Amino acid sequence: MSTFSFTIPANAISSGIPSTSKEIVADRGLQRQVKHRILTSKFGDGYEQRVRDGINTKEDNFNISFNNRAADEINLIAAFLDSKAGLNFNLTVTNLTGDEVIKVVVEQYNISYPQETVHSLQTTFRRVYEP
Image 1 (cartoon, rainbow, N blue to C red):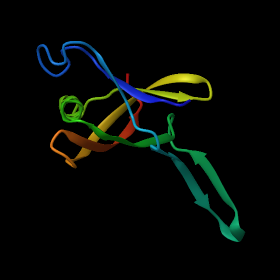
Image 2 (cartoon, rainbow, N blue to C red):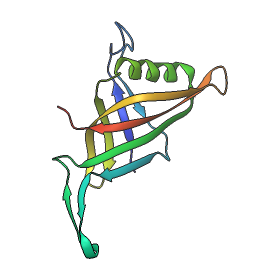
Image 3 (cartoon, rainbow, N blue to C red):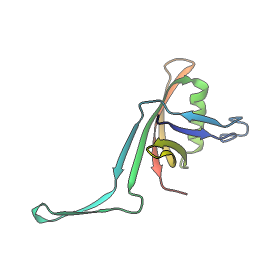
Image 4 (cartoon, one colour):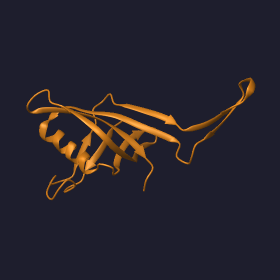
Protein backbone atom coordinates (compact mmCIF):
# COMPACT_ATOMS: atom_id res chain seq x y z
CA MET A 1 0.00 0.00 0.00
CA SER A 2 1.30 3.44 -0.90
CA THR A 3 2.29 5.79 1.88
CA PHE A 4 3.31 9.39 1.78
CA SER A 5 5.10 10.58 4.89
CA PHE A 6 7.71 12.92 6.25
CA THR A 7 9.60 13.03 9.52
CA ILE A 8 9.82 15.99 11.84
CA PRO A 9 13.25 15.50 13.48
CA ALA A 10 13.75 16.02 17.19
CA ASN A 11 14.46 19.69 17.99
CA ALA A 12 13.55 20.71 14.40
CA ILE A 13 11.29 23.56 15.43
CA SER A 14 13.02 24.83 18.55
CA SER A 15 15.07 23.45 21.40
CA GLY A 16 13.13 20.48 22.73
CA ILE A 17 10.27 20.66 20.20
CA PRO A 18 9.51 17.97 19.28
CA SER A 19 11.32 15.99 21.95
CA THR A 20 11.64 12.95 19.66
CA SER A 21 11.39 12.49 15.90
CA LYS A 22 7.81 12.14 14.70
CA GLU A 23 6.71 10.54 11.44
CA ILE A 24 3.70 12.25 9.87
CA VAL A 25 1.66 10.17 7.41
CA ALA A 26 -0.71 11.90 4.98
CA ASP A 27 -4.37 10.94 4.77
CA ARG A 28 -5.55 8.60 2.07
CA GLY A 29 -7.05 10.10 -1.06
CA LEU A 30 -4.24 12.55 -1.76
CA GLN A 31 -3.67 13.73 -5.30
CA ARG A 32 -0.46 13.76 -7.30
CA GLN A 33 -0.28 15.93 -10.41
CA VAL A 34 2.54 15.24 -12.84
CA LYS A 35 3.49 17.50 -15.73
CA HIS A 36 6.51 17.29 -18.02
CA ARG A 37 8.13 20.48 -19.32
CA ILE A 38 8.28 20.08 -23.09
CA LEU A 39 9.30 22.66 -25.69
CA THR A 40 7.26 22.38 -28.89
CA SER A 41 7.83 23.95 -32.30
CA LYS A 42 4.89 23.77 -34.69
CA PHE A 43 5.38 23.92 -38.43
CA GLY A 44 3.04 23.88 -41.40
CA ASP A 45 0.80 20.95 -42.28
CA GLY A 46 0.44 19.89 -38.61
CA TYR A 47 4.09 18.87 -38.23
CA GLU A 48 5.70 19.58 -34.86
CA GLN A 49 8.88 18.81 -32.97
CA ARG A 50 9.12 18.26 -29.22
CA VAL A 51 12.10 18.23 -26.86
CA ARG A 52 12.37 18.05 -23.08
CA ASP A 53 13.08 21.38 -21.39
CA GLY A 54 16.07 20.81 -19.10
CA ILE A 55 17.48 17.90 -17.14
CA ASN A 56 14.68 17.33 -14.61
CA THR A 57 11.56 17.84 -16.68
CA LYS A 58 9.09 16.09 -14.40
CA GLU A 59 7.07 18.45 -12.20
CA ASP A 60 5.23 16.82 -9.28
CA ASN A 61 2.65 18.44 -7.00
CA PHE A 62 1.07 16.54 -4.11
CA ASN A 63 -2.21 17.83 -2.66
CA ILE A 64 -2.04 16.47 0.87
CA SER A 65 -4.46 16.59 3.78
CA PHE A 66 -4.13 15.89 7.48
CA ASN A 67 -7.79 15.77 8.50
CA ASN A 68 -9.43 15.47 11.90
CA ARG A 69 -6.25 15.23 13.89
CA ALA A 70 -5.48 16.35 17.41
CA ALA A 71 -4.88 20.09 17.61
CA ASP A 72 -1.37 19.50 19.00
CA GLU A 73 -0.40 17.41 15.95
CA ILE A 74 -1.74 19.99 13.47
CA ASN A 75 0.05 22.77 15.36
CA LEU A 76 3.27 20.73 15.23
CA ILE A 77 2.91 20.18 11.46
CA ALA A 78 2.19 23.89 10.92
CA ALA A 79 5.19 24.92 13.04
CA PHE A 80 7.42 22.53 11.05
CA LEU A 81 6.15 23.91 7.73
CA ASP A 82 6.75 27.45 9.03
CA SER A 83 10.31 26.52 10.01
CA LYS A 84 10.86 25.14 6.48
CA ALA A 85 9.51 28.22 4.66
CA GLY A 86 11.60 28.44 1.50
CA LEU A 87 13.61 25.33 2.43
CA ASN A 88 13.24 21.78 1.17
CA PHE A 89 12.62 18.67 3.21
CA ASN A 90 12.24 14.96 2.46
CA LEU A 91 8.97 13.30 1.52
CA THR A 92 8.87 9.50 1.35
CA VAL A 93 6.74 8.24 -1.52
CA THR A 94 5.89 4.59 -2.08
CA ASN A 95 5.76 3.74 -5.78
CA LEU A 96 6.29 0.81 -8.14
CA THR A 97 9.94 0.36 -7.16
CA GLY A 98 9.44 0.77 -3.41
CA ASP A 99 10.05 3.77 -1.19
CA GLU A 100 11.55 6.83 -2.85
CA VAL A 101 12.67 9.94 -0.99
CA ILE A 102 12.15 13.19 -2.86
CA LYS A 103 12.75 16.82 -1.91
CA VAL A 104 9.67 19.03 -1.57
CA VAL A 105 8.82 22.58 -0.57
CA VAL A 106 5.61 24.05 0.81
CA GLU A 107 4.61 27.59 -0.05
CA GLN A 108 1.25 27.74 1.75
CA TYR A 109 -1.16 25.70 3.81
CA ASN A 110 -4.70 26.00 5.15
CA ILE A 111 -5.90 25.05 8.62
CA SER A 112 -9.56 24.46 9.49
CA TYR A 113 -10.90 24.23 13.01
CA PRO A 114 -13.99 21.96 13.01
CA GLN A 115 -13.74 21.44 16.79
CA GLU A 116 -11.79 22.96 19.63
CA THR A 117 -9.47 19.96 19.98
CA VAL A 118 -9.63 18.61 16.42
CA HIS A 119 -8.11 20.48 13.47
CA SER A 120 -7.31 19.80 9.81
CA LEU A 121 -4.52 21.02 7.52
CA GLN A 122 -4.37 21.00 3.72
CA THR A 123 -1.31 21.88 1.64
CA THR A 124 0.53 21.24 -1.60
CA PHE A 125 4.02 19.75 -1.63
CA ARG A 126 5.95 20.76 -4.76
CA ARG A 127 8.88 18.60 -5.83
CA VAL A 128 12.24 20.32 -6.22
CA TYR A 129 15.52 18.97 -7.57
CA GLU A 130 18.03 20.22 -5.04
CA PRO A 131 20.86 18.62 -3.08
